[in-house]
Image (tube, rainbow, N blue to C red; front, top):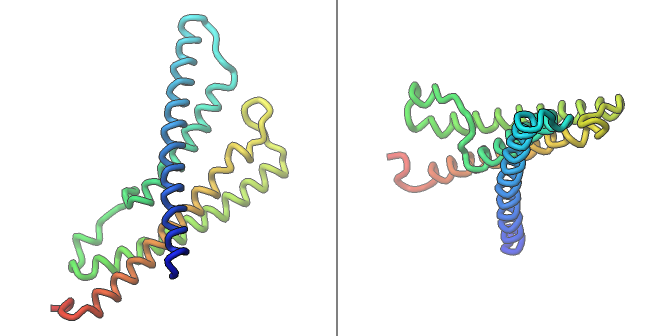
Length: 174
């Protein structure tokens, strides 16, 4: 890959990471402020915002999915690691490649079905938060799953590249 293209990709990656982190901080801060505000309104003023509970649920969904994207970025996502204790150490890299490939496939499948879900909500004119189109609120689903699919695919490809590089390195198999 040329230097300018790899520099552009590195810059896009930095911007994406910054956007993920900033959105997590902003959403968590807004979620906390809204939840505390709702509690204060209920206890002190014996009232509340009609739409606040539903918005809090949507914000939790967004935080969970953006957090999942960030976890996939840093390889800190939830995984069940049974095989690495049962197979020889030299095969754990192959198992990691298979797991990342399978995770990419599953995230791609979830992205596809979440797009279908959004199409249904658009067709049915479903709303949330009194009269807000629900497809906008749930639009994070295909975006998040596509980004996770991409990250797992890249991780799998890097694992394959690392596997072939270590096999071709003199003295690597000793």
